[in-house]
Image 1: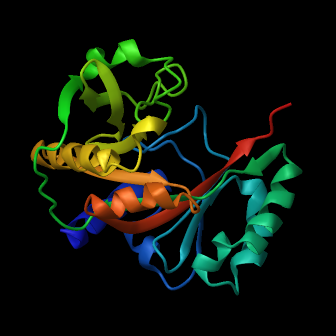
Image 2: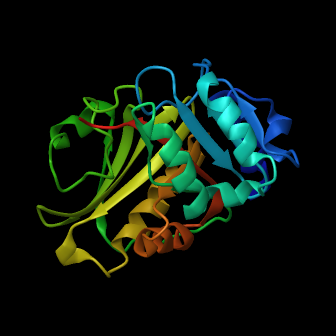
Length: 250
């Protein structure tokens, strides 16, 4: 299962990072120019200034041409995955600040690696497309739903809610970040945590996405152990790491 998804991931990342699929498995690090290729994942408007990705070997960096001379010198003798370490990210960040940008945190991304079947443990409700909109603006679900005002190119497709009577205990949702690529997010209300609700909902949603013929994926931060544990419990494993430059807020 995992190897099949990796092959499809490489095809998707080649669109995202404007490179050839083989570049993602090259021995050397690769620099490309930004492009808004059809079908790419997009998390902000306009052409990217810098985005970088690794599957654990080399790194592909898509960056504005003004950064290429600097980046060539930085990446020439550096193992790809080490470009995501604090020292190298700090060096990149200092260069970006000259242009009004800074580095975002790294995103640690997961793909399915095994089937996980779950027995019915909690009562759930399923929501689809417009049925999700009543929850927009609700501060309890910042991860489960994407909010169209913030990122209209990532429509929310589906959510599953665990309920205790009329009370919501948790919600897992997915946004379609690229055609047939569904990113899962999870929020469990604090009073209901440590009961297995997060893993239960994410597993249900992951299985439903696979049944539909789409690809579920999951992302979290390096230090979010609780979120990473949910991913592992739900049948995901680490697949890639990426980050990007964002404009400095004035």
